[in-house]
Length: 197
Image 1 (cartoon, rainbow, N blue to C red):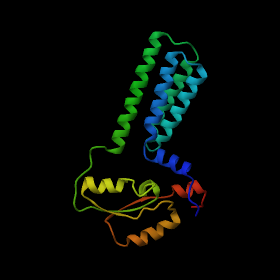
Image 2 (cartoon, one colour):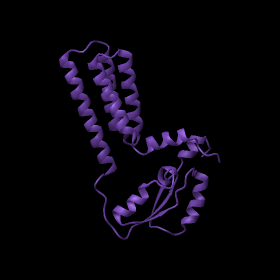
Image 3 (cartoon, helix red, strand yellow):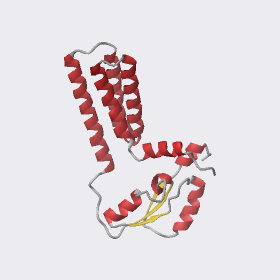
Image 4 (cartoon, rainbow, N blue to C red):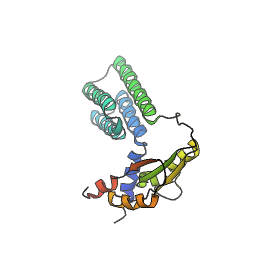
């Protein structure tokens, strides 16, 4: 199997790691502020569309609540950009986007369960996964390593860069009977390479 290009790996990691959400929100904030600064409509709409796409891709698992919020805001904003905003409308746009950004960040916080990791000594976690879990290089502090440190759990990590559904069987064989809970995060490389499931 050919190694994915650095660009494909970087893009996959960017969206898979959750780092895309702040970028999308920043682009939306830039669009609103650019409209208030008097940017051309095409530049404002382009920034807003890029922000919406980034936000949507970053929010993919929390599809329904965030998608409704994104679609509603984008439709209202692009329609409103078609005319010159009054000072009152500029303030309302900033307020609306601030509320939307806060809702997105709170939704992300709730979805990730930040700060709510249970401590347990009897959990043995087995992982079959690809590079999103294994990391892109040996120096990465991966989430299984962080989980093991923060929760005092035993983590049997069989994740590998470039892993596919076909290689998952070898990963499972390598694990043997390790772990009392299995997490399977695989299939992204199959999709990226167009392999049949």
